Image (cartoon, rainbow, N blue to C red):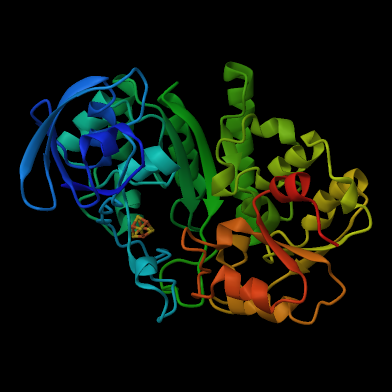
Length: 426
Ligand code: SF4
């Protein structure tokens, strides 16, 4: 069941008398289960919409709207599909107690995989989900493969019912769906020959598999450490060698590397990152693949920096993973803007020092790092660290943090989004 949360003023929906709380029941007789049904079935300019108003009255609308004009309805957030797995490396288990409730939800939702690029395992698909994926052309999907060998994958997912993912990908691929895939690397489980097999099997599926990334498993102080551990540098180097062999073959046969190591894999291996051109369209940058090179590319391509930036003193807050790499990223920014940039590397005091990504930095740690920095005019903070309600992972409000700090704060994905647009009020 889906329900209207907001109706835009002067929209088609408002003219029809739709209001917040209205249930959207069916279109042309087809029941509406979720936002996907709504978006795809309401795409036509003429259709019959059955609703139930908040008063309980059922009303059917014969909708004819000017071509392309939106109905102006915002739906209530969807109910998230819960995960059927119990991975030892699950981030939910790695959370300390006392965080907000939403952080303890294990989601595994192909709809969010399509919409937002979240990785899903496809282990909870029902036959009608598969038909919807094909009918609505939910492509590309982002899929956590981890291992092609079903027994190894079931062990990693702690799910004895997990279907053979290679067969799933082949079947959906044959029906027109494309995939970006990932392997979360767990040493002595899916590395070595298992990794070789996984990469070979995925490569063998041909065009439907658009890319594969190999990402070292991330554990916090609170994770289960009994059966999984983080890879050592030599294990990361071995994984990169396997990635390199497949990428070399793909370059020759397909004209692009296809197979990528996450930035974190290079960092742990002590290896240099490939050049920006290696990553093509940076399609897995949200997964930490090519994220550093993407930043450099964005900075190099930006123009029209505000004159007021020259001489500004800017702190760039990041996690321990990016800390050592940030100076080389900021070099280009310094040259382009004339501002002075300093890296402020913040250790994760909530999850422990093994969690090094900037997107999981708690507000308390940022506060401690910046509170006495009166030498900065501005601090750029990782925008991935705040959610839609502008809260950090530990519940600290972004606005409260900004009010307490001695400098201006801006939340930024790639520096260019803030500096090239707003400049600095020195
Ligand atoms: S697939 Fe594994 S890591 Fe992802 S939410 Fe489920 S249990 Fe957690």
